[in-house]
Amino acid sequence: MTHTERNTLIAILINLGIIFVFGSRLWALHETGAFDAADGLAVWAKTVLWMIPVSIGATIVGTILFEILYSIATNNPKPELISDERDHQISIYGMRVTMVVASAGFIAALVGLAFGWTAVAALSLILAGFALGDLTGNLARMARYRAWL
Image (cartoon, rainbow, N blue to C red):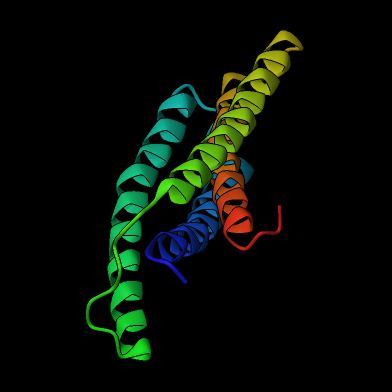
């Protein structure tokens, strides 16, 4: 498994965890009616703003720990950090998949707004589009690395 594959794998795992934790939190707030109040958008925004540093921190810590554990497990203290044209092409492919899914989430939110959805629902759909876009982009990268696609 190459360095880039390991980073993609940890990104998938972290992404799933972040989606679960923050998705659960947003759903719980929705169930209690926190978004229906006058400050509902602010409550939603404050909750979502926490996703950014938590995601970044979890990805950094997860990547470092995974690299250390992989190095110990393979008895290889100096991992290969070289990327080649194949890595570059796979990265571009994953980015395309990410953009298509994220764009679909944005368009779905616009359609929802056109049919009377609330701003919180539309913003949640955009957030879901970005989160699922990142997940599907990383899954597409891993599939390419493993020659599934």
